[in-house]
Length: 133
Image (cartoon, rainbow, N blue to C red):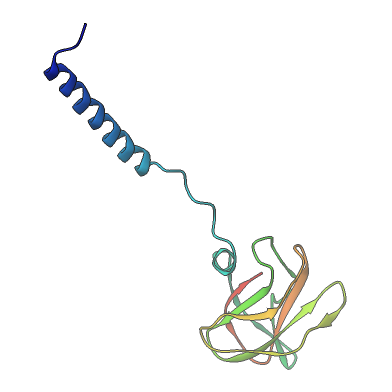
């Protein structure tokens, strides 16, 4: 037994509508994309800093040590004003070479640093800005 033509057409329209609205709903509720990797994910975890004068240099944090996170592969600095910075590591009791941080620009103060590494930043002058590690 065959269906009447109008009923078949109505059923096709209803199914099309269901597919279209179902597709729109599925598109509207698509799963979230994975978190970005690389610099933006690292910079999203940045913390504000302000240095403290200790002798002729300026340090952050003023006491103790900062620790690198799994969000960054490097130690990055974004100073509000131009300054020179170096990274000093607790485990080796040494500092790397001096890098110039230009105002408002992220720089790599140290590269390929392991997660959980204790460090502090040593500046040539008072500084305020952000650090991501």
